[in-house]
Image 1: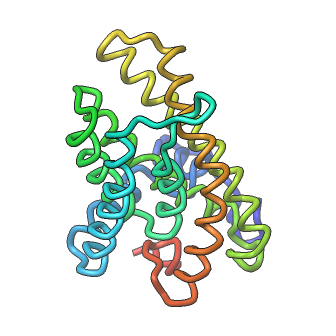
Image 2: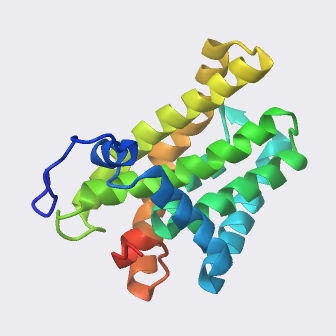
Image 3: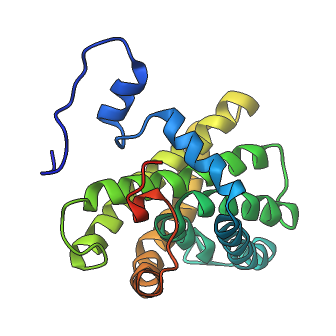
Length: 223
C-alpha cells in the first residue's frame, strides 16, 4: 500500500467497497458518475470534442490506406488512447469512443464497431485510473518514474482491452478469439509502446505545465 492509503477493509457485504479495495479505489458508481458528469461541464465538452477530432483525423486516413511495414500495420492512432486517457481522463474516454465510430464509418464499419466504441471508452479511462493509482505518492508525476509506469499501464491495458474486444467478437458474432486477439494486439501494441511514450513525454509535460489536464485524478477531487 502507498503511504496515504487506508487499510483495506473487506468486511461487510458491500460489493462496491470490495471493488474499491482491489480496483482503483473507485466503485463502479463513482466511475460512472465521473464519466457522466463530463457532459455537464463546458471544459469537459471541450476536451471530448478535441480528443474525438484528433483521434478521427489520425485514424481515418490510415483506415483507408491499409499500409503496413514488415507485416505490421501502420496505425499511429494506436498510440493515442493511453496518452490522451491519462491527460484528459473521462473526457478522452468519450472522445476516443466517438472518434472510433467516425473512423469506422469512413473505413471499416461493421456490427463490431459498437463493441469498438465501448472498448475505446474503457481503454483510455482505465489507463487514466491505473496510471494515477500507480504514480500516487511517488513524487513528480511526469518524471522518469511516471514514464516507466506509463509503459507498464500501456502494456497491461492494451492486452486487457484487446482481449475484451476479441472476446466481444467471439461472444456476439462467433468470430475466432485467437486470431482476432492476435490481430488486434499486433495492430495496437507496437505503436502504443513506441510512439506512445514519445507523445506522452511531449504532450503530457506541456499539458501539466499549461493546466490542460482533466479529471478528478488530476484535481484530487472526490466530488
